[in-house]
Structures are given as C-alpha cells and as structure tokens.
Length: 123
Image 1 (cartoon, rainbow, N blue to C red):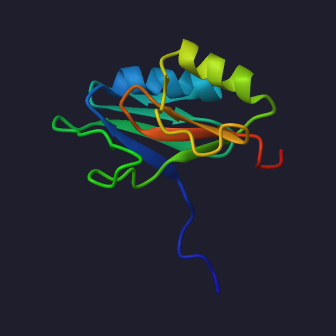
Image 2: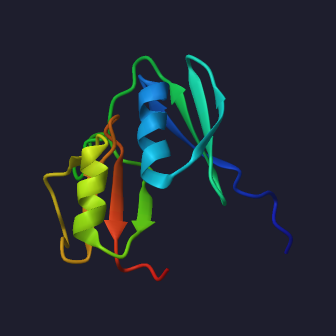
C-alpha cells in the first residue's frame, strides 16, 4: 500500500511562538525557515517543527489526564545528565514525575509540553 502522505511538520501550540521556537532551535540545533509574530518554522535534517500562537493555550498537565499531553518528543541522547543539564540551561523545566530516571528524563519545554531525553533509543 502506498503512503497517503509524508510527515511534513510537527506543530506546537504556545502563547509565545518566538520563545518556544528559540528553545527548540537551541535544543535540536535547527534553523529558522520562516518567522512571523504568530508562527515560526524550524527546519532540521529530517523534520520541520513549527510553533504557532494560540492565545488561550493551556499547557498539558502530565501525568494527570485532565489536560492530556496528546503528543511529545523522545530525544535520543548518549548522556542523560548532560542532556538534562543542557536542556534546563536553555529554558526546560524538570517534570515532577520521573517514571524511570535511570533510562529517561521527562522535561517540559517553556510552554509546558512534555518531552523526554532517553538512552533507550539506539543512535
């Protein structure tokens, strides 16, 4: 069966597109392809990440399900401590719940979206 389409981008809702885009740009070493007050597109080798303004954005409340995370990133890393420290230095926050901190760390981006850094995904 042929694919219906291809994954072209992942979009993150936020009240601050420029700030959130800058966080992900630094975290993943991406380049800005397009930028406006309400929308920023970042490009890397394999995927485009966009951030778009949503005035009444409510951050997910993971691990609760009252406001589900709906989607999150898994970032493959070689060194959990180093990856966590670098993400925190550019604006991430560490989530209170850490289900398996020896294998992966749950962090929150500046808009509250959960993402993980993990050594469980082969490079």
